[in-house]
Image 1 (cartoon, rainbow, N blue to C red):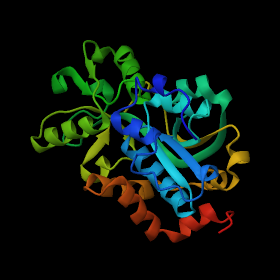
Image 2: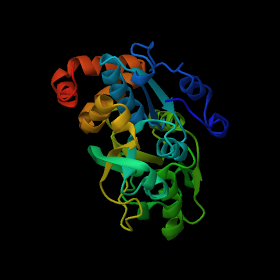
Image 3: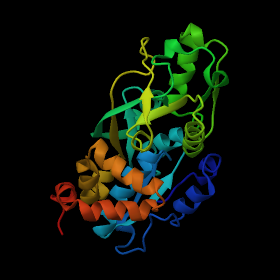
Length: 293
């Protein structure tokens, strides 16, 4: 599916996303099946969603689809699927992280349920720090919390935490990006310095470093979450087999972290996804069992 409002999306799309919208992103393939075999998957550029979207894209590629993977700002991702400008996304964090976007766009979406359970968001610190709860924080890390992209659900939750926890009065949430956040975390840990970051799991950083979530006695960040799949209205009728695969997609945190670790180690998302798909034929077979080969 081609985008109808690229001038609107251009305000939030990076160069890579613009290429993707034109069919040039690395997840795209040559057209093997004509226009009726084209699928556009939108995703937010979190390590977790890069992993999951590339895996789904690879499975669809192997079934002969011309797949475009389009990274978007979080709010634009939801809008693009609800408007039919993208076909689907496997990146909806509920009930808390993307609650605002879900409420705004749910009427234009087809809900396909969770694709991963046990997700979580919160404030994360190295285990060597003395603080175990948000309420324990005083003046660590110069009273700064290193965040990710403005507009992300975990950023909104952190802003609420700063407002609700009296001990965080005067603290600052510093927006950056998912990549910049992990770089800051890595540098601080190497120097055994204090650092507080906006975190979520599944994420490869929990396998790479000894980290802990700060307890959240006020429940600002919510409890366990699920990552959910959404499709545009009409996708089931237009591309019934692709719809079945997207609907059937479900995996575990361990699966996702395996792909994320490969990507973090220098493997391209496309290659990491292909490696996982090849190594997990039984799971892929479950997702594609209702598709005519």
